[in-house]
Image 1 (tube, rainbow, N blue to C red):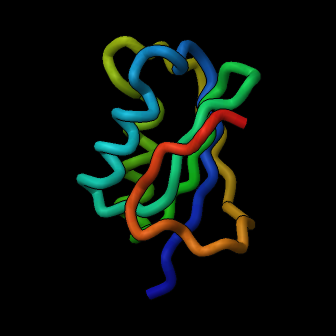
Image 2 (cartoon, rainbow, N blue to C red):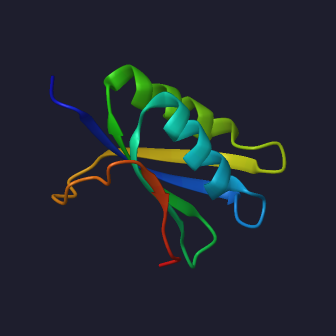
Length: 95
């Protein structure tokens, strides 16, 4: 089965509230590979790669986030990133 690849852009109060760490924990629990990083515009960006049901579950988690977050909206796009996803789910530096 070919893995699903989704890019997420999460808007709202999602920096400085443990969003990246919490997403990495949720992704690993679901078996989703990829990464998450802050963006200079205040949003959070992520790449999620894995089984369609697991990626969908992570997208649903992203719409809520950790308790301190206030998610306004989540853009979900089919990822065109050609690079191989990491073996696990990692937090990356801000871009």
